[in-house]
Image 1 (cartoon, rainbow, N blue to C red):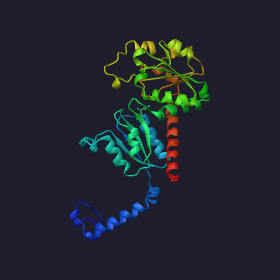
Image 2: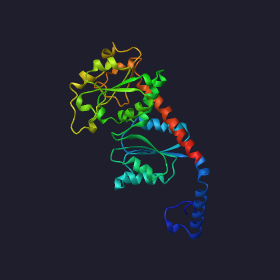
Image 3: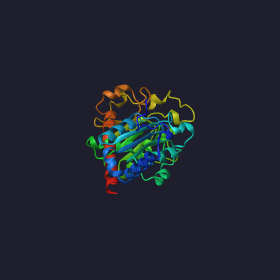
Image 4: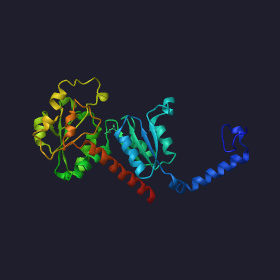
Amino acid sequence: MPHPSASLIDISSSNNLQIEALFSSAVELSKSIEATKSLSRTAALLFFEPSTRTRFSFETAVARVGLHPLLLEGALGTSLEKGESIEDTVQNIAAMEPEVLILRCSDAIDLIGLQSKIKIPILNAGWGSRSHPTQALLDALTIKASGRNLANEKLLVIGDVKHSRVVNSHFELAKILGYEIGICAPKEFLPSEYSGRHFLNLKSGLEWATSIMALRVQHERHGQKYSLESYSENYGLSLQKLKSWGADGLLLHPGPVNYGVELNADVNQDARCKILDQVRWGVYLRQALLARVLAERKVR
Ligand code: CP
């Protein structure tokens, strides 16, 4: 049976005329790229490190603003397995002209240097232990949407701050929005050269705080496994420990949660627990960011 004439399996089955026609068509398409893209604009989601919330949240937001998601999740099945670098991978995908690159990667990647090499805007979806701006923004939005004035807020972060990209972004955001941050953690979980407010015990931290954010112990970023024996007893939150805390306090966690370590599952029954609200607001926040990307690219 002859091949359908539109198939392409080997070059040898094409003739000069067909190839010239293909080239002309591609050149015409490149001239009307904006018209072509209005049919199907894309967003590239490149997750070189694991994620559940951020990836699905961005995917949902991408769908809601009418972009088609292109997903790369880890190295498996990509040319990273053949030794291509992450920087090259990102630049190659950027050359396919998505509207936006949504990127999660390790500290080893120079995201700022990478952005300077490509025109497509990058949205940081979690950068090693450095930063996670959309998480900090959605946390602040969750607090604000609960009817609070962020400028009056005292946010107590409990746990492994040293390895937390979320808290690094909160330090930056707090300077802009005016909320205070206190840390409640053993000394080994403090960031190096931290000189801010620090509570060694939970009781004094809770007395100060108007909202609290528990963190996961990030074993994967510790040189050696951290012992959890006394951690949960001293810093883990439970309904019992929160009993005498402010009735209008807010409890946050960026996820994923290690139940039985930093949180007892019973806190989910408490109206002050806003963990799933954070997830819900995360989608709207990311939708708003994507809308800003699309608006800016339209202007150019
Ligand atoms: N909060 C957060 O970044 O969760 P994921 O790692 O599941 O995306």
